[in-house]
Length: 288
Ligand code: GUN
Image (cartoon, rainbow, N blue to C red; front, side, top):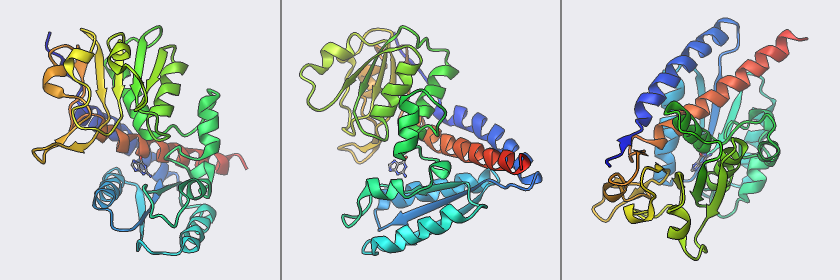
């Protein structure tokens, strides 16, 4: 079997078109969706991510604000900016790009963002709501993965799902979202004794470990759906995922490529959360 690709670029374009339409409606009603992005330091990958987020906002007709601080900025300066953005009714989403320099406690920074504007879905309150199966801003990458699975009508209820990676950004929320939809979920990580034992039983595998070509075809059940969240540089300097694409595609039924898979969906769901936040702001204004 040779797997079919799930085309993240095509799905992202389709969803973004709908979001641009909703943004235009909101703008016409007096609430233009607005995302504020904070970048601290000179991490080149973070700079690219932030540039892409700002560009995606502008293309969809959102207002975007970008604040860049030097790596040695005092934390109070960033907390001051967050307080200002929290209080600004014209701002609907606030995002602090991670990782942060060592003088910051990332949890403290994420907690300083108003949960109503936490379009990354990283605030403990939103994370807790997600865990309880209540309304929240869903973290963008796992939510994008769910959209990709749904776009292909992948059965989730009753499926065996294995998530490799236990980060707060991807692995943990991914497991919770799959669980909420009725999958039997196993979370594997760097201390898992026999990874292949688990992955070979999985109908759906989500790889989010951050190690190039980590999941190989021999570890995958024939016909499984393989989602690759990794973005790594291979030995050849090229961008590659956590999945060894060449061997995995010979075994899987559906697979996401890198680049052009999950990546474009992450920014798309950030736009979706920002539109949702703007909609809530408009609804609140109408109800007074
Ligand atoms: N760093 C890596 N991924 C993300 C993300 O989705 N949001 C933020 N804020 N920082 C990140």
